[in-house]
Length: 111
Image (cartoon, rainbow, N blue to C red; front, top):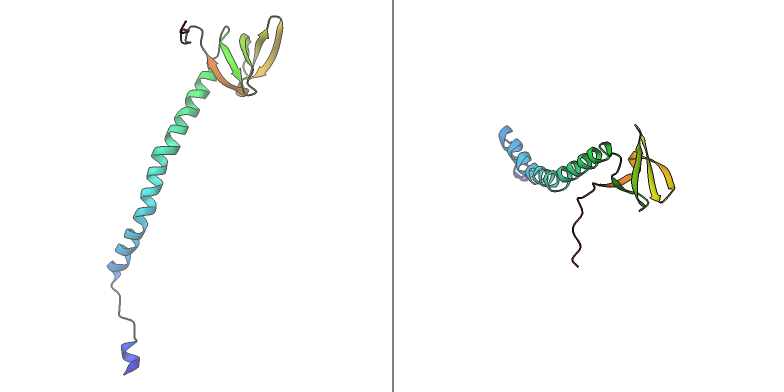
């Protein structure tokens, strides 16, 4: 008689799938929130940076990954020539630019 009480009840087929979906919903919701808050804005910033670096032109002020600020004097396909001081020019790979500043886009000084 004890053996009959310990027997597992027969489970229905639809009850298992519903429980599985209920358990997976929080994980799915966390992934969707992570995508919307972290991944999409990061992808947008990367695209904007790539577009600004590819559109660099002569006369733009650039900041390298090393923190050097200079003015673009020559533009090639993969490299640019940047003048950091009068007569002091270096060739820089375009992918090593961290920022491109357009002339006239700066804020006025509060004097």
